[in-house]
Amino acid sequence: MNREIILGKKHIGIGHPTFIIAEAGSNHDRDLAQAKKLIDVASSSGADAIKFQLFKAEVLHPVRDKVFDIIKDCEFPREWLEELMGYAGEKGIIFLATPFDNDAVDLLDRADLCAFKIASSEVANFSLLRYVAGKKKPIILSTGMSDIVDVYDAVEVIRQVGNRDLVLLQCSALYPAPPEKIHLRVMDTLLDVFHVPVGFSDHTLGIIFSAVAVARGACIIEKHFTLDRTLPGPDHSYAIEPNELGQLVKDIRAVEVALGNSEKKFLLEEKMQSRRVSLFAERDMKIGEVLQLKDIVLRSPGIGLPARYLSSILGQTVRESIKKGDPIIWDMV
Image (tube, rainbow, N blue to C red; front, side, top):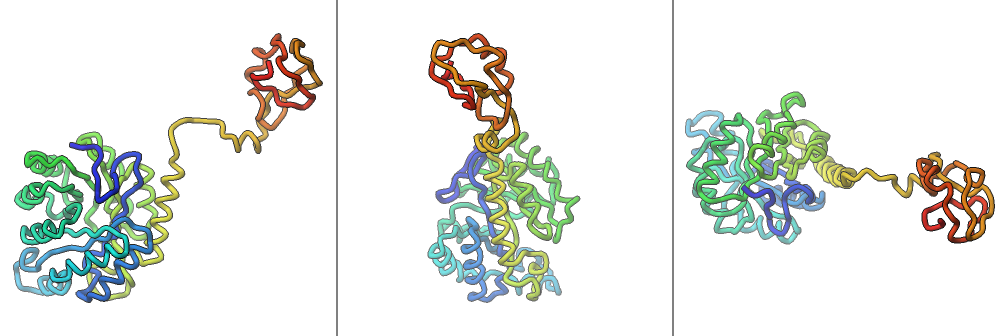
């Protein structure tokens, strides 16, 4: 499998900016204007993509009961797809959708989406996985409702079709998910076992754990959002609101900057501001003089040679004039 994939023009993998998916889900409430407002919010927040879900009540819950009616009321009208994709393009945000049946897969493929997002509920739906993988586009697979064997089987189905562009998202399919149930260390396991980019589909309340997941190596973050948590509908109550989505994006970008690199260095700013001592000249010295212990003093700031070089500097010959109070550096001797 590939350790790095491309979604649109964005590289996904270790060392690249986190790809942030604003999950609209069914929070459009079958209102096209509301769906567009969700795109507006996702775009203005700085998210990389907005995602909806293309399901049919007849597929998810064929029994005609109250649950069927709830699902039916949440369906994404498929005739919206072209208009919303175009609107997202105008707003500069990638449009994604989760298919739950082959017709939806074909529709999204014809629309030329850059990737398929597969829900946790479909990890064991090998027929759907095989059909999606055959489209030869990147797949983002949530892994809630599954153990490591389930994930292995799903990855094998995708691999055997010849699709090697896969991202695995750690996910706890609880709504909301309590912190003790999200198990972010599973991302380490998924990376070690499958050698693909990993991420986190965040169903917790609030936004802190998405930033924590990025600090642990998440390459993709997916987070449900809504225009208003008080709206009726099954997915609004645990979703974050527009101001929180904007803060989530800011927090993730701040974490990326804070991660920096793995080289431990004494920063220039620390040298200028710290109380750490370094080597300074105790008197004026001319070219050709030999440095002695009485010529050196230890004091802050740490802009001269570190104190550990005191013994190495003694006995050295001065190469350029040194004034009392100058920091001693190698070029001087």
